[in-house]
Amino acid sequence: MDDRFRIPGPVGVTPQSTYARPPGALGFAGGIFAAPGGISQVKALKVLKMPTPAHDNSTRNAHEITFDLYGKGGPAIKDIKQGSLANCPIASILAALAHTPIGRKRIESMIAEHLIPTTTDLSGVAGFLDSPPKGNKIISKRYFTVTLGEKSIDVSDVLYTDDADRNWSLLYMKSPTDSLWPCVIEKAYAVMEGDSYDNLDKEELSANKVFKVLVGSEPDAFSVDDTTDPGKISKALANAGKTPTIAASRDEATGVTGWHGFAVLNLNDSKIELYDPAKAKTLHISLKQFRRDFKAILYKR
Image 1: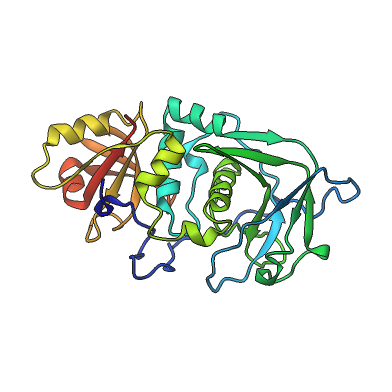
Image 2 (image 1 turned 90 degrees about the vertical axis):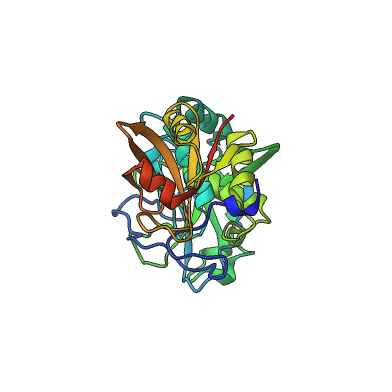
């Protein structure tokens, strides 16, 4: 599939405006983060570095995040909200995985949690932080091994936040349900892509590439236009509850966010249900509108 079908970034982002940001509040309720160095009296057995943040104008810090890896029911689509990076290929594909039984198994197989005291060494990124921690280190209670393609990547539960004195908000992938798995996968992806969140915010991060890494296979895909057989579209969308499926909107879309990726949830009574990871909301559109506003469908073979 060629670059025309690359799933884009969030609202307003074009290949010429990499750092435009999606709207929406970034805040979390108070009391959801642990203080840095919460087990400072325990010698850490694992030492991990931090990928560099995106090179935008944000002021930021880093904190240990104490969310559970999953909610009670395991990975769920409601766990995902795209943050300040133009990386909806990752967010939409994770949402599509979380929506399907095979996808949820895939997510759980990707992450192993290790309850071992871990030091996150921030010395290499201290210059990006508003208030670096003492000694440029944070000690936490665990780390994760994330399998992406053929690579196993170790990351801690220390993530970038805004620079608020309390009630910090995550800068990048968020979790409205306080489940850490989407944030951990995004961090591991940043490590894999050159140890930098900046590299998740670039045009080269195509939907095809991300799909293969996260889903584990090359996607089946086809373009959508006025000549595309409606039956072909309906068949692909109707299977979205069984197989991970995403759709890319046109740059000039009017009824949905343009140049953006959505997880396809269902086709029911001629209404298509989509999940917008930038807004963490579902929406329903007609097949006619889908053909008008979308340019491609990608799904697991």
